[in-house]
Amino acid sequence: MPDLNQDVEPDIKPDTENQEIFLKGIGAAPGICIGLAYLVDKEGVNVVKKYYIGAENIDNEKKRFKAAVKKAKDELHKIIQETPDDFRQHASILETHVVLLKDKMLYGKTIETINHEKINAEWALKKVVSELKKMFQSMSDPYFRDRADDIVHVSDRIMRSLVGGEQVNIRDINKRVILVASDLSPAETSQIQLVRIKGFVTERGGISSHTGIIARTLEIPAVLGLHNAGSLIKNDDLIIVDGTTGIVVIRPSEDTIVEYEERSIRYEAYKAEISRGSQLPAQTLDGFSIQIMGNIELPEEVVSVRDYGGNGIGLYRTEFQYMSRAGFPTEDELFDKYKDVVEVMSPNPVTIRTLDINGDKALPYASVSEEMNPALGMRAIRYCLKNPDIFKTQLRAILRAAIYGNVRIMFPMISNCEEVIEAKKLLKEAAASLHEQDIAFKEDIDVGIMVEVPSAVIIADLLADEVDFFSIGTNDLIQYSLAIDRGNRHVSYLYNPVHPAIIRMLKHISDIAHNKGIKLFMCGEMAGNPHYIPILLGLNMDELSMNPQSIPAVKNAIRSLSMKDAGVFFEKLITIKTEQEMKALLEESYGNITSDHVYTP
Image (spheres, rainbow, N blue to C red):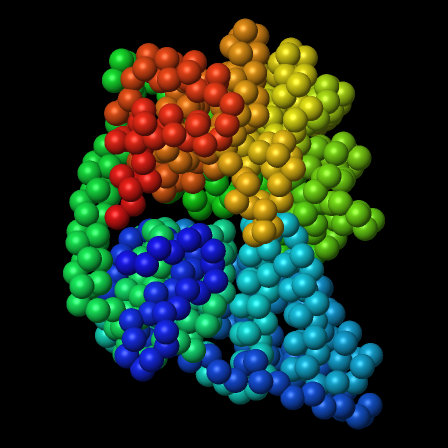
């Protein structure tokens, strides 16, 4: 097999009619499948003509647009009603799309554009969606960039009604195939029948897109973001999809087929092996236990955490409840969502991170004035402290949900002690207001902070006096410490957890937490990579939180290691000066247990 790097651009061998071709995209759901390609035809939606509407026909044009929106809404409701039980947990994603249909940024703006510019509904919709896509795609956070896909999925459905095209019906496919499409919406993905669809490949989408989330839940191999897949793959082409590495092979040779069949057998055996142990404790060979938790964005994901053997929720990102809406959610709406998660996980803990919006996660109705550098601007706790009413609404909802289980509250983006003190003051005020109104709540809950800003590391001893736990957010901590935009492909190669500066920072945080007697958690991507487990054992972490699908592999790695040996290893690691030497020591000491090849086919 050719040496494919991590770049998402296709790597193509010389192009001949029957040439074996290797492509590299984004591995969104692990596993391997081999089968015939089925191209999902969605032509027509992108071919839209512009024409002007006479003043006397403007009202009719707006009615035509509204009728198309209603048809799209009815179709989505029908899909939701017919969604099989296996997909029921993702119905909320489809319901979000129903809400998007009437979003003022999409619906209202399109009506306004028809009215003011006197143009046809198709062109007005295309123009509005183009502007919304640019807004989302300019955000540096991959999660929010992927929300542009939701806008496109919804608008495609409206557009197809406007132009009179037929909706794609994945459920009607009656043969065993691998889907290839420019994109698949969550509504289309939810129609997949596992007995027919082996996997899928799309040109758009990313790891945190809803389509990617659903693929991982269904546990079918998926490669997304594979540019030009639709033009390079033909109907009935034999293809291989490796969702672990993001590789797609078109018209594979016999040798390649044999190689991937063997990989698939090894992967399924490995998956079965670690799944059998996923409900066992994460206990080292010498008897030390670590709690393994799940990171979630949607309440529905709590089921995956439990199924994969998670001991609780280490990071509940609450931004999703604020998205795809015309305004802020009410306290009752937030309470219902939190209560669902807390009840399902009880008595295990649920760590709710307070709102982390703006900066690179701007919402249309909550934007602040334009910022030159939004990643360092009015975001997360800074925004909440400047908007205490919005913040206290969320705090009241969390305190009310706390009576249904074991809740912790976590403040993001803390950079000084004043922010923690002020946030705790508002938490007390929220509790006092609930008490005055005689509303049931629980006030005695653990309060912690995310340690993700270098200044928080430096004053960790001062911050530890104010909180019950630290949770290290490695993604932002590495980005801010090494001055690397991890969304910038030109410098992303410099993003490395095994950097002497990062290792020393982690050691400093660990020492402070243990000396001060507070708990130490980690909820960044580093926690979910088995390769780094010896380092995290050496830091004596109390909890690790990760994507649910990573839990079995991390538990398996922990059960293969000794806490004592990891401590000795870490004492040697901390003295090393360069990244390369650190990586070499890690490979030399634990390569036979935690190397990537152990966890991939």
